[in-house]
Image (cartoon, rainbow, N blue to C red; front, side):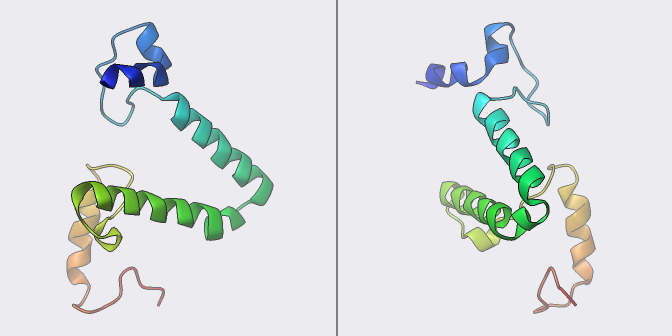
Length: 104
């Protein structure tokens, strides 16, 4: 069943790819979406953040939440798993009940 996904990763046609960290095999779909984001950025500038990209992040949170049985509010997105604990440790100074992140 997983074999059908192999064509999504062109590098697998040429070599065995075992690197699964931040530079995993690039999928055709991922490349296409990055190109879409670049086109949006070029045509709309930072305005793309306020409707298009924030909504995509919300969709991503909803999808992850559904997979693990959480709510989207419980899902934190971060650039990498190794940098997340450092950020989390800085939250310990946020008083209970305070909105985070805060705009004040």
